[in-house]
Length: 447
Image (cartoon, rainbow, N blue to C red; front, side, top):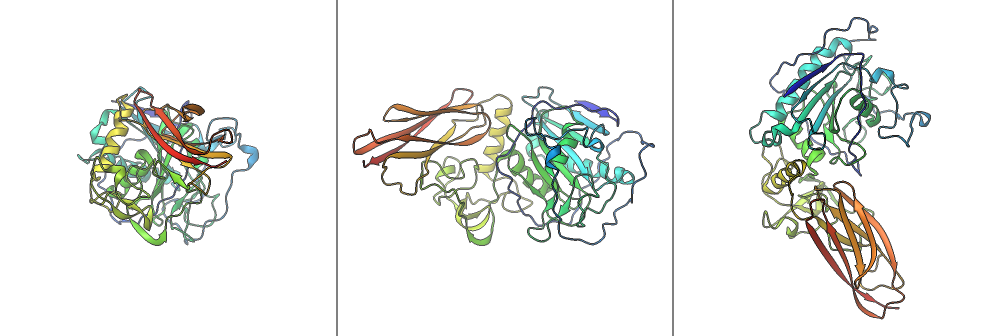
């Protein structure tokens, strides 16, 4: 293990990140219990910083989030995410940081960076102590995911200085990462991901998988985005009241592609792009939530299914056993545990099992095809990159490569030259280590 302490005045850029195709903010109730303190050394005091506008934890009134957007003139979409530069945001670069390195191979390592929001220069000792508590919550539980492969995880702390600690007010320009609390809707902690991304990537060496934004406000609910992919990391947003169970739950989303297993909303899960027919579960990238009710998705690990998931009471199911993705202070269920192990295996270059792939028919009428056939190829595997090929009666109609965990690729083919009757549309996929799988749909063509 190496400890790398980097003080204000030097920064590096990062060459590999990860991206999540959808940003799903997941709501949680706060449990008002603090973790045991764990001291963590920081950089020497920097005395030449400007005097902050205020200090301490006086938040002022809690107000609805105001609109915030980085000017488009400062965003360069041709450059790697976060697509903003230190020259335009100098206060986010050259910051004090500290790294604990266990795995030097960036292709294997799981890098987690902590950045603060709403901590003034005077509050830096408080921020360091809070990060230490969060690190302890991740690393100390014997049944936790870090304990399974402690040598894979690198941790980084970046000391972002805000001019104000008033994160929960309407003014999003008075703290470094434009943080606020979405009290008008979900109650979720909110900040600008580009600003947080620059603060992390410009001050940390490594290919970040998860950025934990530690917010000073005592209100708001922790939340997370789905697992990392190629262009940018996942995000976990927490405040000082987060407890061990909630923090690890959020990492279930951010690092392992796990969905919420609880259902509180009485509505039915009905996404706008739900296909007319599919050989793969619509939520094929989530190991523990399904749109079908039999539990076929996880049958090799657990028999049966319970209703609810992703916050919905209806139209989704989850495995059913007690689980951290359902309620706090519980371990992961067998299905979620298997996903954790598979993810860690894949990072070590081991086979995580056969890829999951399938076909979705885009058209509303799945019983027969006339003219053009529109479909999606869906592929999920942690041993990326994966490749796929789709054929119609043996004639190849689409191919592609999935560079990271999963993707949906739309394609179409003309069926007017086919005879009326039943035809076979097949997808074959292969992961980066050579494991293969396939699925077939039988189609009735009427020309």
